[in-house]
Image (cartoon, rainbow, N blue to C red):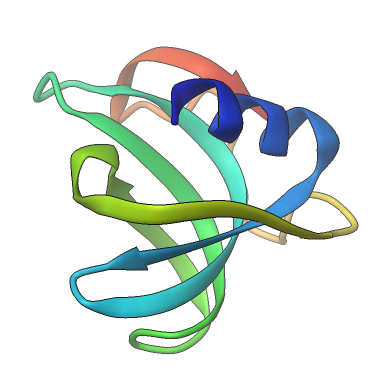
Length: 92
């Protein structure tokens, strides 16, 4: 999963996955370790769940991960070097 998320960020490819029982489509922006020690993905949710917007997904709760269509790039409001992450593996 780790390498697929990193590749999707590098390739600017949407990710499709199930999270909390709901199918989602997400434009990945940042992937790393939160200050709490949990691996997480921060991305723009474009479909599924509670609608569009930036969301945080714990990687151990993601299932059925696949790469999807390309996206243009960072969404407005994206902050590089997000302070909630202690370690960043990959980001736009």
